Image (cartoon, rainbow, N blue to C red):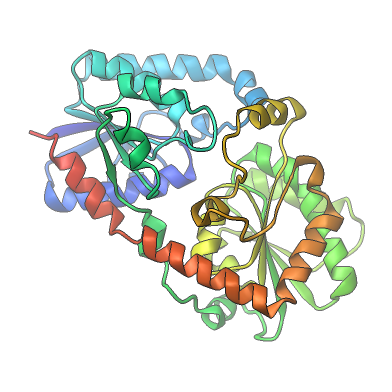
Length: 377
């Protein structure tokens, strides 16, 4: 058997990893995968030495709180791979964790592929020097990324984004509403506060208060909040309970895709979910809150005028971004309602997001697998 070390850091990496493993195994059934994997990767046969949740930490203060545990975990993983040498290592996203690991393994003669370029185009551009020392090749998801690596002499392949392959060019709103048992005429707002506990803690009260403002103007509105863990559901349900008045908020277990596809508008924490909403051609309001210290540090290192992937990919402000102090219930509610009332704006958003979809649809798993297979014996 050919052994491949693999580490994914969160739900989006788990999705990428599962499609990649599937594509690789179709070409090479003799491959085995071991490292840190989520449930989707494990369903494809990957073996996880540690829970993926151990890496799902975001924001400076949050990382500092868990720093000792993360460093210990990384060292344990390195020792495992040095004692049980893989033929190749694939780091999926989680750059701060994976680049250190990749550099150590590359130094020991183990080729290291990094799948998903970190956001060097958004902040911390100087990281590209460290990346050059750490990786054998980068697999980039976005079309503007390869030029940055080529300028530094780093091997890179543009592979597109798997969500663009998975999601249809034209969303089926009626089918999604049927799955969720929603009326065709209902005003549906999907609210995605993030996948991590820390993100949901930052956004739960904000989203509930936003729903309250919208509901006051539209008493027939329905709010869908898809969450994937029991803990994040508990955090959000506690925020609803604190209101002491009924609101038509349905906390779903999963169903993020269905909720967004069924929605008239999406209110979403900045992250991969914004890209999924764009590929579903949905008007959205992008928001994000973090600790004050994390925000001040991030703000100083930002290179892009936008934080939301749809706006970055379009190269302009297609949908509003309300961040940190601007993320208030009144502003979120006003932005969401004004957007869905503007038919010209809705048409412009759909056109921009359709163009993005075409550019990202590259048969990603196959392209990524082909790049990786070139390094295998």
